[in-house]
Image (spheres, rainbow, N blue to C red):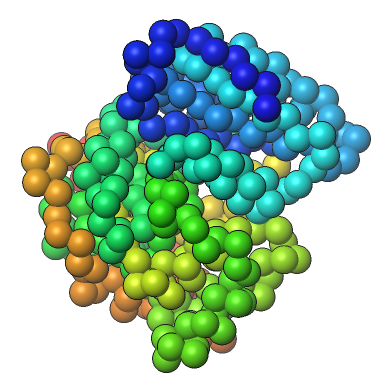
Length: 318
């Protein structure tokens, strides 16, 4: 680790760190950092993965120059000598951060957020820090998976999220098991591995080959009957659906309508209880079995095109 201390320690005493994972997209990273600065983040652990091929070396160096140029908060930079890939880099990085902090919020270099997102997630992390029923919080949701009756209140989902999320050291323990190992444990307990969508089983089978990590966290939640707190509407957007993406897909389906202002921070946070519609929503959207996914994907694209037109009409009318 290369430590780069900034600002006085009093400001950092109760700060929840952001673990930031970057690779070779300096333009995307610049946008992400602008959001973090606007959110008044005071402590960042930045993990810069090494180049996978020679043609990425210059871009990786540009990313590292940007990280070393941060002068508005304390930064701890880890420059990987080799390319771990997102899955291994993130698992190792979050584990390292949570070895010295009780909680953290995770950003990747292709995610942006609205002002107030960091504070919203920080308040949630502090509130539920001792409640083992809650295993994570997130700033992302989507009209396709959000229940219709949530108004401006956050809700709990049994399926976790990997786009701007936070967790605690207590909930991260156990993440050394593979997704397929966790599926076996679920089956031994009579838990249907398809209960939150057939796409998860497919991702679990691809975890090692594609060097992905999030499906492991999702099954870790499912195995432990853990909950993820979601906002009523998304504070986060993915800007990495392009030719440089290594893991993002289905950009047309999962792109949110234009982001709104942050939802109000609840005066009273809800009791941890999964919204009764969540499981059926995920099965409808992602299929209860993988064989249904191609049909559902086609349906979703048609639905989402109609939704975006409706959303634009609503915005223009207000």
